[in-house]
Length: 201
Length: 201
DNA sequence: AGAAATGTGAGCAAGTCGTTCACATTTTCT
DNA sequence: AGAAAATGTGAACGACTTGCTCACATTTCT
Image 1 (cartoon, rainbow over the protein chains, first blue to last red):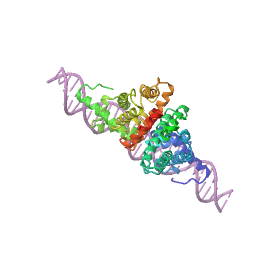
Image 2: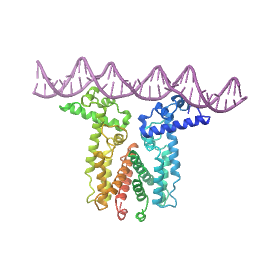
Image 3: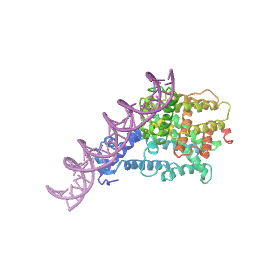
Image 4: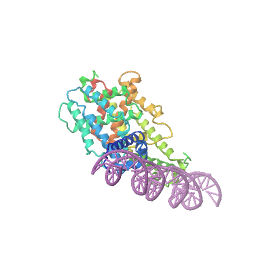
């Protein structure tokens, strides 16, 4: 950030700028993301934007940083300990759906389209590591052992599968579709659970 | 097309243009897709490109048309009749991986980023319908009945899940990873198969 | 040879867009 | 209240992008 907002008024300005940016990224993708458009949608002059963000990239970084933090926080609240695969899957899907309900396209755009000064894609980024080991832990829990490399592959697959279903639902504007959510829960449950537990879902 | 290529030479020219376009879309996304760059990568003058494509959009449409035709053709060769879920899943994954090995990012860019004169996203497009009913048929086969609406939801979920896993693998340049493929097969098998068949995978 | 098909690429015309800056308004501090 | 600091404004620059044309060369067909 170029300048730290000190008064409440300027903090609100920064907030609306970040939100407008997220909205545009989600709705129009990286192509539609221009500083002037963000400022316009935020109802703020372009000059104000550049008071707090030195350049365009720093704004994307701010949006990304906030979004990833939120995602992790939401997910971390769902634990696999002591609940059945079906329950865990249901809670997880609910959380992921909720996380995608405000800016449905944001996650994909941030990961696939938008460039960044840091290196988010690369597997060693803090976000990737935390995200993956969360899933690996869940997998290992239901396999009743400590996480190992094989669990990490399974974690990738289940995480990417969920990602795909949610992302495509978002494209069709159907993240809230209960039928889709039920089937997704079933998919996760079957993959994580033991054969004996399948019928109850 | 503005003009139909009549000689072999010009047909080759059109071919290299389409391939160069696919390469750029796959590697750089819609942002990097400029007519001048496509012509340059194809080793052809920009003028030649405009001999056969009236404008930029018609070139994307040509690329998309070819890609979707190829995808359908590859998939249609894998049938669910008479094979176990595990076998079907294995063949399907192999086919999808093969289809993504030349231009790993192309599919996603065509669906998510690139605009089109026609309406591919909309659920009534010929491609979407054929694609979905293929999966619905497979689901219904293993449920031992005619396809019904519930199977279409399951079809969407499994198709989008595969899509997500492949797409994320492509981003990491790991579509060929055998471990990932094994797990993906397992995911599909469990989802399609019956409980009794799970242990054998 | 003549005609048709094909290929060339410099360059135009029309944008686009990140960013600045001189100035206005509001809030805080003394 | 008055000065100083913080915040907000938006026209406009200037550097760059890019889809596309056209006058002309080269190759192939008849």
